[in-house]
Image (cartoon, rainbow, N blue to C red):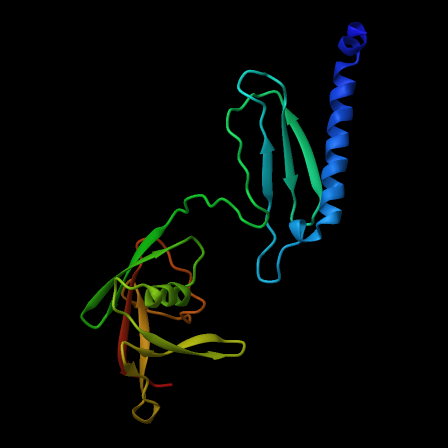
Length: 198
């Protein structure tokens, strides 16, 4: 009998994994809210790792729930001592790489922290939400054109006097709206309130 197990060891492991995957598929069908993301939460990969005990070198079984509710079963021979359980739709965040720039409004200087590909207007909205730097603004969205700055730190655009907020990128007047400009590391953004010809 023991020769049978030695001869068919791999087949038995694969069979066990298939049974395990079928069991998890049945659970996923029985509890659909486990695998379906909520309306406001984006689908994301979540993983549950079932680790062997410290004293055995049995294969590690990794089950991964994909955003489309499918299950993948993988196997490694690498023994692990930690068991990590992550609830569905909750992802472990890794530290994001932040870039920095500087923004000047009048006599106030603001340090901007942003991620690659972030638009200036989004960074300014985040700055407004922070409590450590006193900054306020109001925007108005125009369909097809994006958001335009209407007010900064209590000073509003004044169309009657043709006075508007405009910004400069590294000393050069911006040729693109703040909702389209993608910030770059080390940028020096300066907002000026002045008369405009448009």
